[in-house]
Amino acid sequence: MSDLPRYAHWSSAGTFKMTIAGTSHYRGAIAAIAQNPINTHALVICLGYLVPDDQNPHDPNAVRVVIEGQTVGHLSASFAQTYRSYLSHLPERIEHVSVAAVITNGLRTKDRAYEYTIEIDFPDDLGIGILTEPMEHEIIRVNGYSALQPDADGSYSAKVWVPTGDFDELHKSRAVEEWTTDAWETVNFYACNRQNIGLGLKVYELTKAEYAALFKDGPTTGVLVLRKNRFATLRLTPAT
Image (cartoon, rainbow, N blue to C red):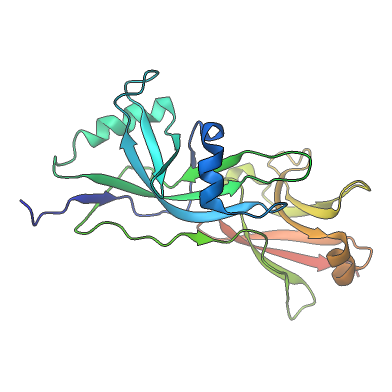
């Protein structure tokens, strides 16, 4: 029995469609993991452990999400029950179940602090792989935005994180529009939502000085080139 696998891990699908609950109660612990500087959004790809919380006074089916030994939130109440049901069918020797996770947002400015978001990468069918050794996963911190790189056609590109796991929430054109105000220090770029109403979903920002150096007075035409996972390429073409 001792030679049989003791660990289970869901292979990452790259979609990170499930948002965990209760992160506001663990902001300090999440900030210590994320290590995002002031005025910088977090982007941390890591490994989360799913731990049944049998002593939880609010929900007997509660499941904690643990990253680097710290509780950072819980599975939603509706999914925790589903997960518990699936867990009961695993061999008793399984000691840990892990899943890919990503920490985003958590911006701190001189005026206020925004909450972190943690998403986990459950596959749709809850298929699971059994590992013979503990899952080793180096935390990848990509806090901040990647620098724009020039393309041969005169446009600029950067790797960005798509802030939704459901690409149907994005407009079918994958258009990205810029927006700023006199009060802002940055020019922000928003992926248009499905209805093309409002600002959409923020995917990138430049300081106004950086924007002027590349695009002068603008404007730009932007588009997201999606991949199979949550990273995409943002392409910005200056006005001609």
